[in-house]
Image 1 (cartoon, rainbow, N blue to C red):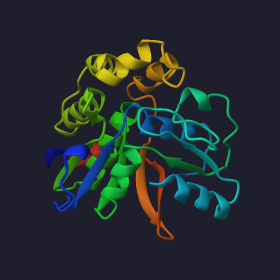
Image 2: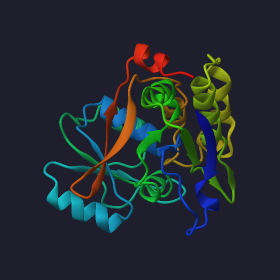
Image 3: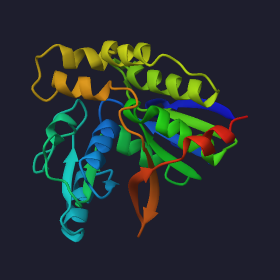
Image 4: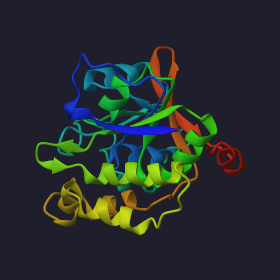
Length: 243
């Protein structure tokens, strides 16, 4: 199994996109938030690239809630939740769909929606995502780094890619150094600075919990709309696919 990685903000719009297995990584915070939402009982996550599109889908999708943020992390006015896993703690999401709009992660999913297998990656789903990929036995896995901006190194997402790549290659790495890289990344340090109420330290703690959940987030098409749902591959099946 080959692995490679690309950086979302460096991509040429005309560049040929990978068409096998793609993991779009957004640790801080899109796909950590999505994972906590499903764990809290949300029925599915619907990634929508634009704010107008999110409000339109909410009008047509029964009992749907919205979550998201603009670039930099501020919540979107009129949405039910910001892009914040801690804001979902204690929320009643049981059986309700969640529409998600973010500046990086969701944009990445939209860009690669035509590949054979598309996953939303974060450190809380690291091992489960690697197991789901191993079960699929793709010829190539492409990791998409979304967190690198002109003022951010994106190392929280690079660390997640490094962790999953090690697992795919049969290693069993110590997860703590990868969690530390999330905390010490350019964006991670902004959560620790305690100077922006929309970047709480509680979010950083939740996003840096390696392998918190035993499911992956796989994207599928539903009536022309991307939908993220749980994907679980048994450890036995995943391990049998190695090599």
